[in-house]
Image (cartoon, rainbow, N blue to C red; front, side):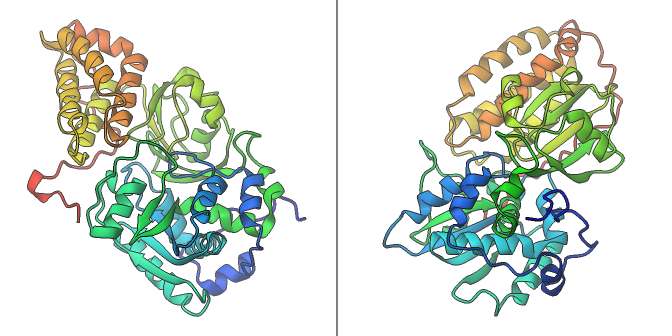
Length: 423
């Protein structure tokens, strides 16, 4: 077996343009996964890179076990996180690596369709994937390769919402009391995997489980793509071995090496204080801190910013992006945003708002039809902890030292209610 560190991984030496099928084959060789792909994925310890980190082999085996059905493989490249751009970067350089993994997984579970979902707002990515699929018209016999373009919404990338849209063009999450549960597209059992996950599958199929495990940790093997934004020279994507210290991740991205805090996992993630920058980027190390790798996002907060003000901006947007299908989303999240607004304003209502905010978070947690409200609660709770000094100052009515500072976190403009698109 070739040296595991010398073989190309997801972003090693990729061209500055979407690689054609000919370029892709010249770099990686032809894809020829054997019949034991799921066993290889199990041995590799690959977990989903979309946020939940569920074991890929186990998830695929659940769908494969559905007898008497045709099956569907769904590639989730929706990337609803505004701070995330790793899937777009991957598809902009290595679209055929994603498609190799998708078709290999499809054959492993007995699927006859591969549905690739890209947000219609990302027109450059849509064009890239459409062209890549056209190059493979004669490559993947027995598989129907389809491109689907749902609207870009935060919750539209949640796998049950994506399947809902594929069925009836409503990008709304479905209530699932237990996971993994069987999602269905047009009645067929569906396996939904993130674009990056599929790319890892393609490499494991070529090089094997031992190669994949040569990087990373025992519990979190392999590499992962991370979108780094905030206090950074420019938003970037880096490929890191899992277990890389957070400080080294910031250095690789050209980010501020003396930040006040970092937000891990995306807008539904967790703030960590700078004192934790030596923690490894691996779930087994982050879970005791209340954090996770999540969707592969690091937002770097500089020392002169107000973490509560930035959390308010995120919370307000997340409340606006909810599907409004249950009370925690429709009423709870806007209430959290109002309490945060009162705290940031540092007026006479700030002490009461701070107490009420903590109580409301306790009421909302675990009661949503999907996990969107849980993510917002996690974000808010971590902000109250990490930015406790800011919270105390605001409760005492002291003006925020960062009130005139430009925002750090990239939060989209709030759309008018009537302009929200779910179809």
